[in-house]
Length: 505
Image 1 (cartoon, rainbow, N blue to C red):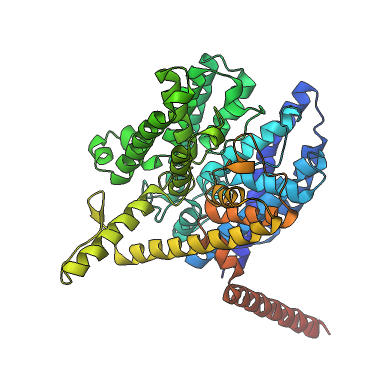
Image 2 (spheres, rainbow, N blue to C red):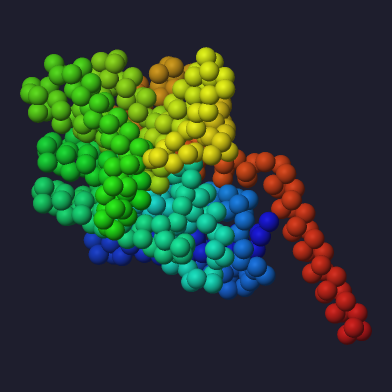
């Protein structure tokens, strides 16, 4: 394992985090708030990251698959630990675990919060809460790759992109990976700016528009208002954010096809069509189910679409309290939590493409019961899915179920009702945020024990990085190999040092 390169990547990501932290720092100075929490954290990040970047020189910059998985897992844990410092120093919560939970929730674009009241927070702290969602949406490693020089990372660092990008596969839009990362971030930035402009036109204050656009872009759902989007009571804002969330939950390859005018490729994209059809059909069913709860058909469709949009995209905004909706509507929303958005988007969940592969695999196996010799290839967007990819999806789904069961068992130690415990697990592992019961759109996660918050924090990381990058950190063989290489390197260094000292004597 190329541990020197991994260490260098971690340090570079810490410096990127420090650069982004300058944004709320400058804002705090402009509005007369204390910038002390950010300045202290920036100093710590630079003190740790800069010496390593300057002094650690990897002999090779090649990153193989294992290096990519391991790097992504370690980077996300490290930036979450450090990103919690402004919250802790500002005394947002006296518990560092609470601050860590809030930070992980932001970076993983979950939007689950331990805060019972957010409007009293300093504006710069609220800004940092939403900014980490925007940064985590596309991924800090993708941002790093977009701005690294061509010779900084070997071409095989596509494994970094695959480890951090949601979905079973990740491909380059153009031959050079750095250019792919740039294109992804340009699309991401343009859509974010468009959302901000639209919200301002809809008469949302600029500060609020920026924060909610960041949250919508990262499909995270943090708000600077206690009542979330319901505070604005605006049909225009609901539809703008609803449409924006759906756009950000679509594979960014779709937007690339739009730019290069390959419209036929979009119409052949079965994952995209499946995702949109689920949004439309779920909206219609829920609207029919809740039509008696709202004064008009327009309001019914508005709230049905917004809540379907915010749940399937795993954003977590709330325009109304869906805890009060009928059981059918709540059940549909919980199923949408599990499915999530498309691969290659900022949304969480198991992804639409995996759902399609699981459905088609089940169909193939049932067909084989009556026709054992039938050749039934699984196709997505007209392309045959390799059996190894199908096996990977099945493995992912089995691990996903195991994580859900384990998390539910650990959270049940707190003694809350099953609906709260189960929906809290689904909401965190699928990076949704609000669940049902105590963790509904008007609730929060403050009542859970420190152990449960740690479990849910790792659940959020497992969900955002899709299990494998976090899981590989806890595989004993990974640590043994890593430790052996470090030991061998240290031994060689010691021998060289002793040999040099002997010559001098």
